[in-house]
Image (cartoon, rainbow, N blue to C red; front, top):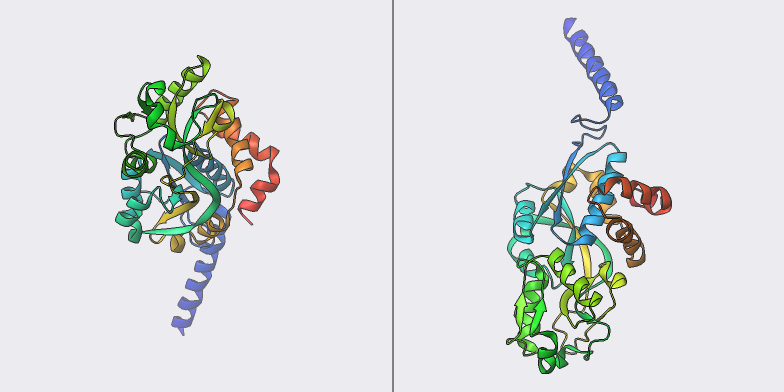
Length: 296
C-alpha cells in the first residue's frame, strides 16, 4: 500500500517543482521549456552590421528573459570558437564568397540558421570625384592614389578576396595593399575626403560609411568581388536543440538594408560612444513593429 503513496507524493513534488521553476524566470535557471538562459553571441571585430544586429538581439533576448553576452573576435578565432561550442551563435556570416574558406574548414561543425539579408556585397570604393569609375582603370591611375589600397583586418574574408581575386585579376600587384583594421581604414577615408584627396579603400554594403562619406563604388566588370551576397546567422552544433525558441526566432528573422542603416546611423554616426545598449533600446522604442516581428 505504501508504494502508490510514494509514487503519488513524488509526482506531486515534481509538479510543485515545475510550477516553481516556471515562475522563477531569469538567472541561470532553465525556462519552462527546459532551455538554458545563457547565450553567447560572437561578433566580428570592426564589422558594424554584425555589431548592430548583435546588440539588437542582445536587447531583444534579454527582454525575453535570456542572459546574453557579446564576445568580439577576428574571423579565424570566431569560426573556430563557434565550431567548438565556445560561442553559441553569430549574425554576420557572408555567403557564398566572403567566408567560404572558413566554412570549408569549420562548416560541418556549425549550423546555418538562415539568411536575414540578401542585398549585401563587397566593394572597392574611391572618393566621389576620383578620376576613375571601374577597377579595370585603377592600375593605370595607381599613382594618382599614391599606389595604395587601404584595407581592413588581415584575416577578413574581404581581405582574402582582394588578395586572391581582385588584385591579381585587375593587375594591381604593384600597389601597396595595406591591412590593419576597419577603424584605421575609416580614419584614412575621413582624412582623405575631408582634404579632397584621392583614396581607394575596401568596403562593403551594408556599412554606414556609404551614406556619410562622399564616395563611390568602383565597377567590377570581372566579378572578382563576387556579386551580391547573403548575410546568415550561424550557430554551434546543437544550439537549435538547446535553444529551440531562440533558433526559431533567429532563423525566421529578416532585416532590409534601409532598416539596418537606420540602426547603424544611430549607433555609429549620430553618437560617439561604444555603450550601445541605451541607444539600441531607444531604437527599439521607435521601431516597435520591427522588434515585435523578431520574436513572432
